[in-house]
Image (tube, rainbow, N blue to C red; front, side, top):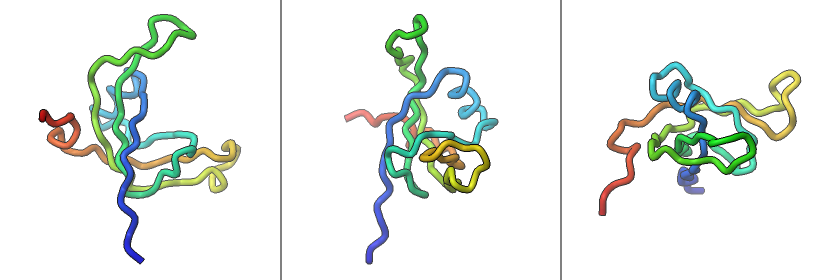
Length: 102
């Protein structure tokens, strides 16, 4: 059986957490696993902010891509709600993190 191709997941991320990913301090993502995340998948993280609580998120235009290197499922974590995962992530080089011009 051939290995699965990695999926690309486009996700919103608040400015505070986006900056920590960019600086290398934040090397994980805690997400509800409604997308079937797998090791090797790419997360396209798009920075967002809210103009006011309850409003739709606004995109800043900044984004980066990270690779999922490990997944810890909720059943292995004490007091973690079912269906959630903690993913270890590794930032990809900027050449892969920006949309390429056509």
